[in-house]
Image 1 (spheres, rainbow, N blue to C red):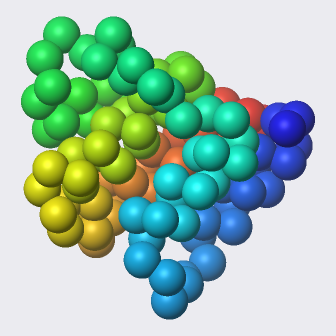
Image 2: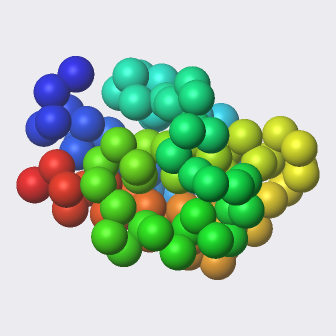
Length: 102
């Protein structure tokens, strides 16, 4: 998928949906082929709050790792992705990704 298509897919994530957000974002990363398998290599520890502090200066690959990390966190702590979405942290990552694709 080219950058223009990735950007459009990310922009589409701004549209409210009735599906469980975790699955929508997971599918988007899969479709873009940007789901990071070994996201642990990007972080010294797995403190998600600390990792999210990197969002504002992250490059595209690190944004993919951050988004993957929040999706994986939800596996262990069900509902955490939705909480982070409501707090604006997930869309901060998505917006940074869109910015980097421009």
